Amino acid sequence: MADAPQTGKPKVAFYWCASCGGCEEAVVDLAEAILEVVGAVDIAFWPVALDFKRRDVEAMEDGSLAASFINGAVRTTEQAEMAQLLRQKSKLVIAFGACAHLGGIPGLANLWDRESIFRRVYLESPSTDNPDGVLPQVRYEDDGRPLTLPGFFDTVRTLDQVVPVDYYLPGCPPTPNIILQAVRALLRGELPARGSVLAPDQALCEECPRKDSKPERLGLVEFKRPHQVLVDEGTCLLAQGLLCLGPATRAGCGALCVKGNMPCSGCFGPTSRVRDYGGKALSALASIVASNAGEEIVRIFQQIPDPTGTLYRYSLPASLLRRRREVRAA
Ligand code: SF4
Ligand code: SF4
Image 1 (cartoon, helix red, strand yellow):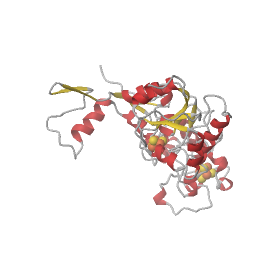
Image 2 (cartoon, protein in one colour):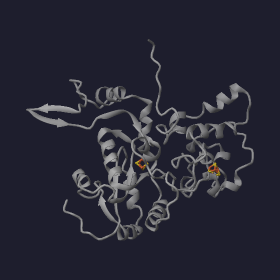
Image 3 (cartoon, helix red, strand yellow):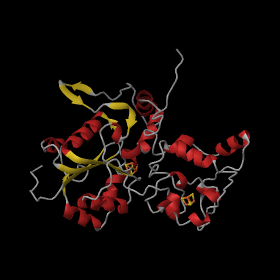
Image 4 (cartoon, helix red, strand yellow):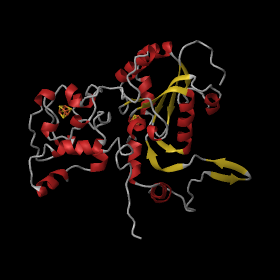
């Protein structure tokens, strides 16, 4: 790419790692406000939208980018290298979205290891036709020409497990409102202490329009799924038996899912006082079941389909366990 004109505006970069692309879409979701952003900064690297190359970043002076917004978890060697390169070139690195912040949906792959993922995807899946059992190689010679692929790590990591991160923009994806607030704070030099999550440090229930209908004592006897309930639009979803994770989740999204009659699934992650999101969510739910009898508690919790995928949907790599631990017989 040709050298960018010298405008004197702060330069920012956007990059994606193991990501669905939704966080890149979230930038476009700023709608007219994107004009405010591009009027105030120069986008010096955004490979999903414009033809930037890695060598463009390598040619930059260290620290010359005001901020890099990196979305997605870290799954491959290429993503780890780009995260390290952008860290070197940036004054601030911002983990953008649930996958960079906590591991996100790609982090659920930590329930398996590389070998079993490759076996399933390249050998066993019903649509695979791979009679020679070829698996991805990081290096392959074709007629004397070397071909390379990024290495695939055994474990998915959050961005801050790979490089130091200055700020976190939570959400799957972050909402236009919190993106804009973060960009404005960055431009005005009004960012909070490094390491902060740029969203209110309180539970979602505090900003939920249904909070006044949430009883003091809930006493749940069953958990229901959204398709099993004719939802009352004015009543707390948890009080209706829906597994709403608002009590364990950081506020800031404006309760968008709850306003759409869908329970919160926890994409903003925990508040600063919580170390393990899934543990906190489980403890919040355990405190509202209407029984002290072991068997009855087990019966109620068995109604939660896929407990790990429900309680750690966005945060398995950031959890205390980080991944499934297998104990193999000697
Ligand atoms: S945080 Fe959500 S929207 Fe962003 S990349 Fe991950 S899955 Fe996609
Ligand atoms: S549990 Fe869910 S629906 Fe109820 S007040 Fe909290 S966020 Fe709102």
